[in-house]
Every structure is written in C-alpha cells, then in structure tokens.
Image (tube, rainbow over all chains, first blue to last red; front, side):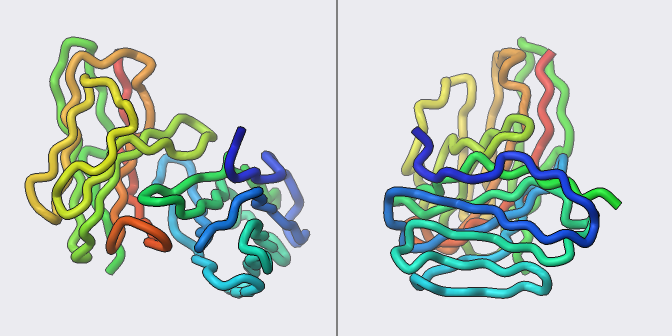
Length: 109
Length: 114
C-alpha cells in the first residue's frame, strides 16, 4: 500500500488548459514537498508546505496543504509545454522522504 | 546556491567491472542520500548519511558500497552489478535528516549494466 497516493498517474492536455494533481494519505505529515523532474534529470524542488491550510503560489502553480496535513494539491493555470514532466509529492517520515508514485504531465502545443 | 553535482553523467559497465559514482555539495548540508530511480517511477531510497556516518541502509545488496569521505562528498562504489541494476542514480542532500528537511537532488548518473 502506497503511503502517499498521487493522482492522476498520467495527464495529457492542450496548452492553455488548467489541471490539478492530488496527493493523499491517511497519515499526517509535518511537511510535504513537490518536485518536478524532466527526463534524464534529477527532481527539482518546487515548494515545501508546512502549515495545515497553507496555500503557496509560484507563478502559475498553486500548492495547497490540507487542514489536517494529510493531503496536498498542485494546480497549474494555463499550462505550457515547458510544464511537461514528472511531478512528485513527498512527505517527511522520520529520516526519510516518502514519495508518491508521481504524475506524468504532458502539455501539447 | 542549491547545487548538488554528480559525476559521471552517464556510465556503461560490464558485470565484472568496478566503478564509482561521485556526488558533491557545498551547501554545508550534513545529510546526504543515494537513490535509485527506474523510468517513470519515483526515486527509491538506498542509503542515508548523517554527519558522515551511515544511518540508513535500505537492505541494499552488497554490490553497492557507499562511502562518505567528508561532509561534502559522497561516493557509491559498484562491483559485480546485474543488468537489472541499470537505472538513474540520484544523490541528494539536506540541511539535516529528520522532519521537514528539504532535499536537493543532483542531476543523476544514468547507469547501464551490460
């Protein structure tokens, strides 16, 4: 059983569309991180959310941490081809990061 | 500067070869990590070093041998690997281990075992 359930697994959309990726757990996390990874590269940290109910914005990306700190979402407005990649959520569990299975996003021009 | 560097970028090795992967960070981070990642899957933790001491080994086969010569460097020594070990090997670092520590990843080494 995956500790962090991420959905959808795969998303293919047209440039300009909006999308939301979800990261859910039955466990509480002290913080959640979102990464984006392009093929052949390492994951790049986008944001860390720490406080329940927190909302953070990074240009066209909006990240939200659930009130109970068990879930998080990533919303992209007006997606662009440069947003294409693997999006990973990760929660701190002891000395480790627990990763979701990832969402492969493809934005077509 | 949040840069973690890894060398080499690509590595092809035979099953009888011995090779090493290298990782370096100059952020003053005291925790460093090795991950293995297969295509379109999340990274899988292999080892964690905290203050230059091995703190977590995720039951990794002994053909993978980590080494932390100092607080900035992390090596992964490879010997007698199998074709199924082919993957992207990622190094990461964080200020500390533990709750809330943000991990910064290097670009990875693409390893192919023939």
